[in-house]
Image (cartoon, rainbow, N blue to C red; front, top):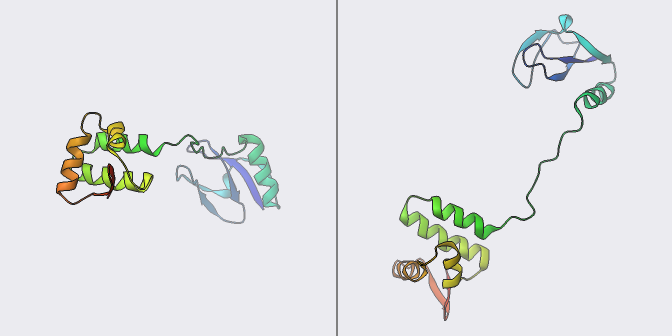
Length: 139
């Protein structure tokens, strides 16, 4: 036998198995003795109790995934917020290579305006990037 109850701790609706002596709320952890719970609905069919719960709380919303995800904007944000200069430059080169295959000074300008020549100079000197064709680089 299953029952729909409201948790005495957080007031969230939940399902309990009335054949068990006690249960704990999955939301707040409050424990109860099942025989003393204030039952809103009960049935031997667990699916019926689930449907009752659904009618009280509505459908569970789907996780929203942004369809306009822009990896360059994400990289720019991570680049701006990275404190370690070495990690910052390594991340920039590796991520641009993953995203674009090969990248140019203009691609770096989108992320670090006015710093592309210096960044390319440092990355080349440290052998982090190589020039695959004139003006195109890879990590």
